[in-house]
Image (cartoon, rainbow, N blue to C red):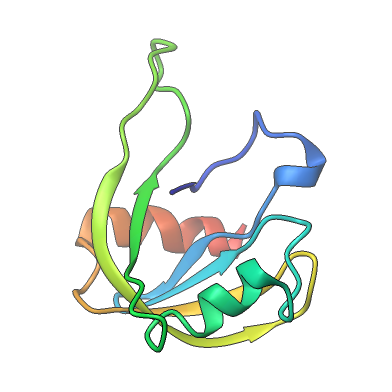
Length: 112
């Protein structure tokens, strides 16, 4: 699960999570995750391990009234590639296209 706008997050949890396009999502792991760690390998090898990775996103933690926003289920994803370590930047392929409204919000955040 990931929130797209992270203004209320601490500097150590300001992960870069955004849609590249309707079927590709860039996601960063927790800061302690290395590619050769158990968690990192579970992401990389999830299909061989018969693990499904499901993507849930929300625009931000709270709405304009201070109420907690719910997550939107985007669907299952498949590992494509990674770069870096602590955190790992992972590119996921969405098996179903991201809804247009959520895609537009997410892509704006990738630009800044």
